[in-house]
Length: 149
Image (tube, rainbow, N blue to C red; front, top):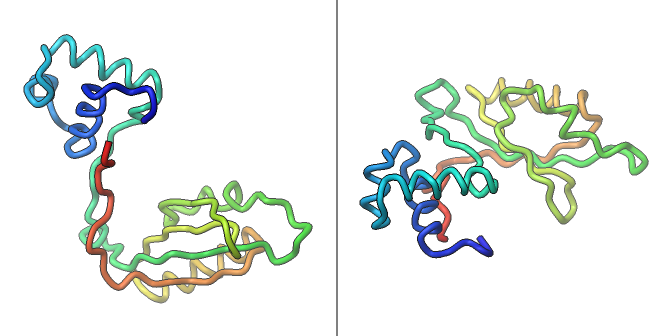
């Protein structure tokens, strides 16, 4: 976070750990008044440093225990690079990363089981005219860690 002072870094770190902190609790953590913290948070949001707030979800509890990373690349070289647009409507795809290396994109997908993963892979191949290479997640020791700012 270039150009962000230490107090703002402390605010971002605290909110990344617990996005539901009240302004009062946040003010106590960083040693400012409530109004000063409120102003700084608003400024951090306006600058795009804080992009939003979200709940951490237990995917297994939601019936989506199988996570996988799906690497994709176009079947033909002259194909347009529009896979993210073509795949944006798939709710099973949690994230799409543009990557360097042999693949073009890496998708994080969450599904109920192997049959659902197989169906999704076929749909991805057809929708985006890509090849896939899949790595199934066996366990997740940690995920969604707050940034070290």
